[in-house]
Length: 464
Image (cartoon, rainbow, N blue to C red; front, top):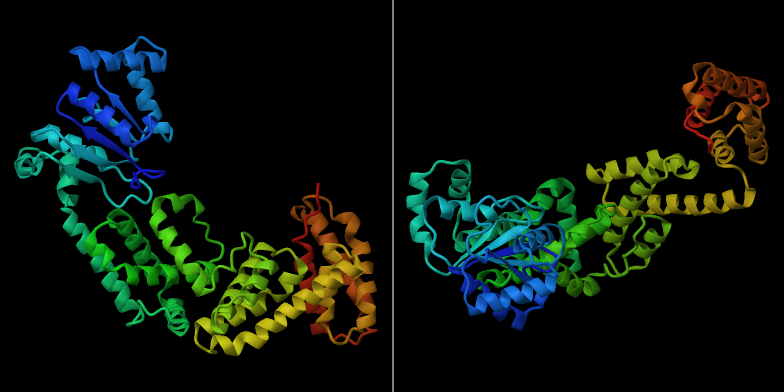
């Protein structure tokens, strides 16, 4: 049951119509009735089949059994239930449903019918590592003969991919080995300093780690009840904890909510790990100052907190690229990330600079609220503040005055009109030329200031 809920679907192939009915009756004892349905023709009947047929007609409120079969197949494709279809001959050829992941064979099949039936679970689907064929009658002894006799596209695809479950376990171990090599003996060591070292390695090996871990996760979910996999559980837990660190500290914008149903056992492990690792406090759905406050107050190590805060600042600067406060610090944030990634500075050495930026943001957010300046006025004010020649007490009035000069020209879509763009640029230049003597701006300072303000203003788009 755990292999299907919210995830994939299965097909039970039986040897007779009577077997279909009996399978349905047995499954209904252990699973909800809606969990399974049988799809078959009713041209050959007996007492058991007739009794089931009458129940089916009553349940669907239809006399046309072909229509009932169509309804069941449609629900199987598009709705959560049924999860399992029970068949004899129907659907074992030509039925293409990517969510179909497990085939239970209780019927001897040979040649092309065997290959075509196996192909039903061979269609790719999100987070589906492979199709699983559970052979209860020994059909595998016919496989080699079938491959020799047929060269269809389906046959070739299956021949290239078919493997005993032991081979899938070997694949899991192979990927696990690559990850162990990547982290140089750290896998399984849950001390925070070990996870700090792993985070350092991730700077250069991020793509490789994510690719290997996601593949490992798929195979783990597929094989999770196998004894050989359970022996590696401690190592898998460690890698899962590291992936959570990666997501929350380096990639807080990644949202895997829609995929979680495909790796539920891994999610359960995360819930076991999240309290001791300190990640429980970091659960914000939005990347904002509140998220940063959660990071700062968590019981993560100082290195982990600093990595998380710096990464969050990078994302906030992108998300709020038109906000003058974040626009004014974006380049500084990029430079700090560069220094860390290129190992020009240890992450903890960058902590004071990061705190300085956070203090600046908090100060300016408060100031913006108190001054009641418009977004554009406040942005101009921040640019003027970077010129020490301009008296601090004059800056707010200068920002208001400049905005007053240009505001009537800033209609929706103004920057796409070359004539209006030139006019706004000219007005900014004339305003700065007028104040230039008062503040002893050199021509170079004047020119740079004009360009910086105009570049900021031209991104401004008033609400329609």
